Image 1 (tube, rainbow, N blue to C red):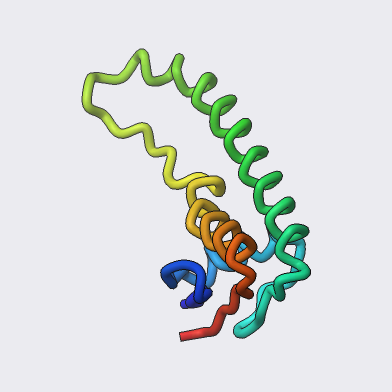
Image 2: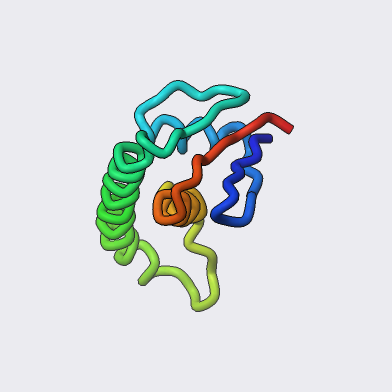
Length: 111
């Protein structure tokens, strides 16, 4: 488990698998402990936003493909889509935006 923290936003915890995806979206290797300093936040934010947008586009395309299959299912059945990357990135994006606005770094540590 990795805990993300900033004085600008509430902290939150992610599983290792999800945290690895976040670090990958940010263009860096996963690590047990680290910091995104204020000067890097615009770059990190840009990469995360880009990954989030790609995920949303991919999910919309998949949803359109799945619509045909779902038409054949009974009402109330599960689509089995799971949680998309852009949904997992949402708390990180919010934290990075707030941190940038308030001039605070974002740090993380293994629990």
